[in-house]
Amino acid sequence: MTKMPDREKFPVHTGGVENFDLESGRYMKVWQGPQHPGVTGNMALELVTSGDEIVDLKTHVGYLHRGFEKLMERRKWIQNFPLVCRICVPEPDFNEYLYASATEELSGIEIPERAVWMRNLNLEMARLASFLMWLGGQAGAFGMGTIGQWTVTMRDFILDRFEELSGGRIYHMYIVPGGVRGDVPDGWISKLLDTLKKVEKVMDDIELVLFNNAVFKKRAMGLGVITPDMVDFYGITGPNARAAGIKRDIRKDRPYLVYDKLDFEVITGDSLGVDSDAFGRTKLRSAEIRQSIDLIRQMIDRMPRGPVHVSPPNVLHWKIPAGETYLSAECTRGEYGYYIVSDGSDKPRRVYVRGPSYTHAVALFEHMAPGTNIADIAGLMVSLHTYPPEIER
Image (cartoon, rainbow, N blue to C red):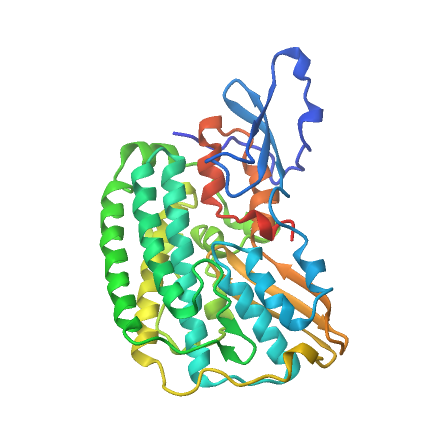
């Protein structure tokens, strides 16, 4: 069983390969990525090894599209809507929601009630699709590729529903200023409910095949332990924090959309009886998949009727009143936030995107990697659930 070594509490990271004498023969530099199945997205890991043990790790990002914030500050408000979703490809809808909500708050636009519910439904569908993609990646990192085939298939069924709803399979651009682009097509709700049943059936199979697998348990238990006192120090949010027993969820702590009208509890590692390691984080995210399914069903049952959009001013000449705002939401990886400043012109003065991936994939991952066996570095990385474009945005 892989265990994290005893180390000084929160030591300063050594900084990379330059601190090791590679000529001595004791250490070796190894690159993993950017094109590697054991890397989350297009990023690279510069590893220093001693035998098969990682003694240092440095992350390298920037192998994908980048520079979103400055691009947004040079485009008109409406021109950024096709752009923001690229910041997080597997879960683009949170960028759409936060950017649209920020512009509405600054402009004083109030959207119809049904549009609020449709946005919430959209976000939970996005969480479900993202979690399914992650779960397959986590299993695959430990050599269980069959589960990856199952979960990617289920994610494709969710994407079918997105395509029918928005016309877009990956980038939906469904949440727009004033509400959403359209109501649900005929028969769509029935198809969505059938898809949820399929996902539940696969999750039952995964429960048997993954969590009862002796190899997965031996490799994942004890790998990448996050203690409660690490959470605030590293800015850890989302399932990584909840697995450590920290009961934080923006959907409950700072309710937005209609989460205050839905019945659910924050899931923590303590409530599941698991530790805050790679195994526990997998178990917790699997529980949150089932929770998302339940929330979607609640929203379908209680969805009000009515319009789904109000028209904003002429978007080609839209000048948003001067002001600033910060809005956040609970994506699959934790707190996702947008800080936007308007100076009253037709372009944003400042846009700052707070994605969880920076703290998880750089500061936290680089701290946790030393002492890990090289065979488990992919499993550790995936267990933290990160998307690189959020880092170099």
